[in-house]
Image (cartoon, rainbow over all chains, first blue to last red; front, side, top):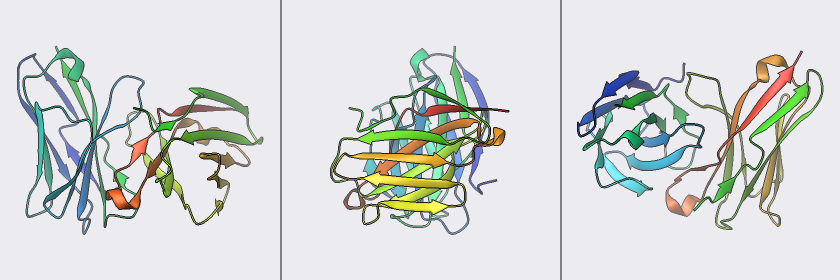
Length: 112
Length: 113
């Protein structure tokens, strides 16, 4: 158990819909990362927050947005969902900006 | 733009032998490298890391080697055990870039009993 909690574990939704994925980082970790893993692909970096502020952005679509709240939990919002958005979405956290990240178990999103 | 590449999608090794997983990167600004292990239905688990000031880091059965001139790193597992069967991801970051990690596509290791 990495200490990073992601909810829900599974999500099935229709095209065009909007969903919110939630992440609770490890206690004390200030940095949160979101990654997407499509079928048999590597982990694609989406976005990073540090202590409530966006710090780095990867290949995140405009239909996607994220935020980190004062209690340090984070949410990833995916809107106007398409079939190709079906993937595993991982959240990771780290105590600072220069240490390894610890991953949650992921949310499997299926868009039908 | 794949800045971190793992060119071997899979590797099969006999129990007790050495497993060598390879990773190449293109960005010369990367200065921190990590290996993660991932079992099915679980998130990646941090395994071992190496900073660019070193060329080797060892932790038990796991050793990571870094060749900066070749922009290449490798993970050695000796001896390999069936429980090591998993997908291994290498990742790299540049500390100037707030530790944005770039991951390879993974190598699936199968250790046969």
